Length: 313
Image (cartoon, rainbow, N blue to C red; front, side, top):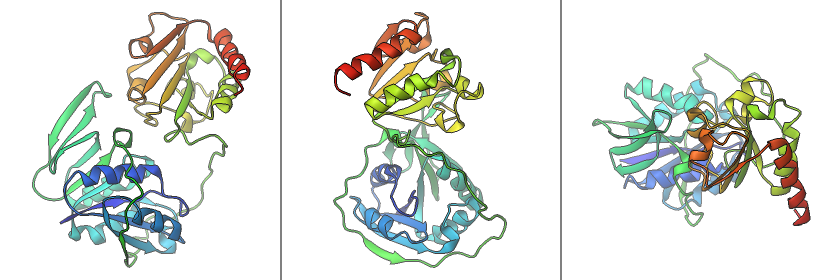
């Protein structure tokens, strides 16, 4: 049977995480279908149908799926589960919300945050905050998998999949969408940005994060933070990078005033180039940094901004 990928989107744009999850699904060696559940999501469906390796796009266009609530999404996925050997979703906030519910209802163990597909039933995933890689083999039966999307290259938009409408599942009636408060920023989304500059406790206050924001604006970068900075109230939770925050793998990651606790490293160590600024030359961040500067960040960051200005950024 085929593999089913749950699309992540905002009813207007297909998230890059979906294309990367499709790339993982293709490696299973079975036909790949995508489920797009939303309302007024025609543009998302068109984008999903173009992903290389996708055979069919299933569309559940209904007001019930205007927002991805765990209970309603799980009911829909379960209504389609008999047609699939494997169900996959990105290991994002949304995927982590509904897929464990699906696994529980199917009475199968979920395989979380895979980094590599070894074979159709064998996968690699991180454990101990990413300090070890575990190889796991799934038992016979259905597989429910979340994908660490930073480990896969996005599928190209060269396909032409068939589109099939599917009926909405019955509403469990146990939860409903009430509202949401979204942070607004002209900067790139943290998990998809090519450059990320993150600050830690060393910045001492939220006001000092404005130094990083000035550099980020020049580099068209996203701004992140360590858990220590978030817990101290310097910046909101959605800035957090790390084991309990967002996992990123940009082309360039700049860590400013971050010591490099193991939990933070788990969220960014797959970055292509890591640069660190810290006044403590013994800081663990320097053990994985490609470029390290032992300096006072309150002097180094303004100098960095000044040099970028001279270069025309």
